[in-house]
Image: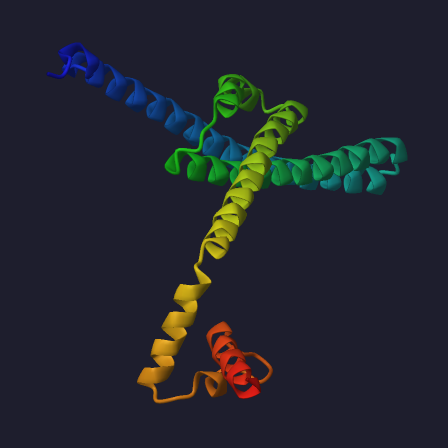
Length: 213
């Protein structure tokens, strides 16, 4: 008789369902925040573009008035806004790429404990819109994804190698012979030039042995 206490009861199952759904909700929230941050960075980049144009116009007016010092200040501001716009746009693309990878990780249930730890500090960093902090955050995510990629490649290579190594050659030879018989072909003629089947080679060796006796 099975021990009734050994199997999870309804309350335990309900608890784990709630925990799982809660984790999914949190991950979904973090993913949403990443996408919002990417759009916010794009928006800020466009604001910098407008500021650049404004500063250029002011520099032009200052030149027309003969005020070269003011013109230089506005020109410096314009260049600074231009570079900031580019940096914001690059970070937006980077955050968007990370968001796509996070979405895949959530869908494939590949969110690791270390990645969850990064999530905890993510929201505050995204709200700050500090490019240095955001760059460090993206570095952490990207390192996790690189690790996942390496693990996936190793797993695929291992599965491929195992599949190849465990293929019984005698079954392969038997199948080839059956296919050749059904097609009414000589197996040795059906193979590419210079390549012989182990089955055909064995038969040929036996016949040669008989002739030499």
